[in-house]
Amino acid sequence: MIVEKPETTSETSQQTKWAIAGGGMLGLTLALRMAKQGHNVTLIEAAPSLGGLASVWKLGDVHWDRHYHVTLLSDSRLLNLVEEIGLKEDLKWVETKTGFFTNGKLYSMSDTAEFLKFPPLNLIEKLRLGGTIFYASKIKNWKRLEKVKVADWLSRWSGKGTFKKIWEPLLKAKLGESYHRTAASFIWAHISRMYKARRTGLKKEMFGYVEGGYRSIINRMSDLLEELNVDIRVDHPISKIKKQEDGRFKIDFQGRDSETFDRVIMTTPNSIMSRVCEDISADEKKRFDKVEYLGIVCASLLLKKPISPYYVTNITDTWVPMTAVIEMTTIVDTDEFGGRSLVYLPKYVPADHELFDKSDEEIQESFLSALETMYSDFDRANVEAFNISRVRSVMAIPTLNYSQLLPPMKSSVDGLFYVNSSYILRGNLNVNETITIAEEAMETVLSAELERSAVATSK
Image (spheres, rainbow, N blue to C red):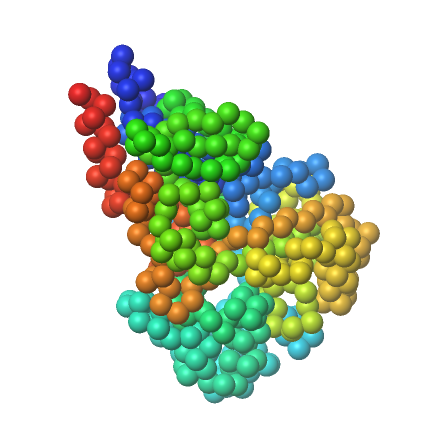
């Protein structure tokens, strides 16, 4: 792929120096967009490698995504990016199935016929559940849903029976007790994305992935950024950002020399911004601190054979320690894993949950014991590798009136910007939404500043 580099001049050293803190998909997208406009960009990542939540690790002898990701036919921003970086031909699409584990039994919920046969709900409850999903898919004014608790909204439209049997267990599995404070916009965003995908896929659940997983995407983006003269710094955790008298920002790194930049874009979680950005206002810090984050403890299993025909098995039984079972090889060709199966067992918990402090051995025993109960033919002897990922700040929970809580992306400090996933307002956290935030920020809050720095450079 040929990358058209921006023109360089003898004035390159006088260019406005931009620092982007955070090398996940959001930071990578911002860096790519800015570099293609000819800006001087340094991408800074605290971890030893790029990718953030989309980063890659080694599971046994396999290199694959540390967390589960899937591409939907309606993920237009992600699909456009994949085409832009030359990986469109590597996209693979598969029709998938959905399972439910409820009352100690596994059920398929992959089409209308199976939905109508679903034993836990009577006919009226099924009709109300289907009606809720259809109604939510037609809502355009999502902001009014921010004013209503998700539990109240679902109880009203689906009925108390359906809420108790289906919605409440699913909300608890995903949000824990935080669901009591979560707005109805949360479930609207999930339903809207899935409904659009089915509509785009001619009523089929068509999910996709890029060959090689996110390693292919991240490596390609990294290569393109280097060709565009982006300075990529990994293993550079930031300890402090302070604006100097000359208007520039001094960034202190842990265990490394400080550096100075003209502008800074923070794509990191709110807790980091509140801690390292010393000059922001007390009101901004207060707003950031009020945002509740959901964390994840996610196990990856490499198995000799699959355990389920469903991509996702939703779980409503509260004794099961996982949020869901993700059978990745219902989508990804087993050749990617040497003929074996990859399964993810995520558990979403608040950032301060005790699960983060449990040992790998405790979590592994709990998760495998649950699989033995759920699947009669599951055998621990088939487990070839078992890794556990822990991330405390994954998704900002959309509490009531959430959009009014966040400070503006253009901070109170001239030259400092906030562009992170907590600003996802019309969707739930996924790669397509993080790319959307990056590109929309380029078109709105960053556009005037980028134009100003380009003019200053040309003088």
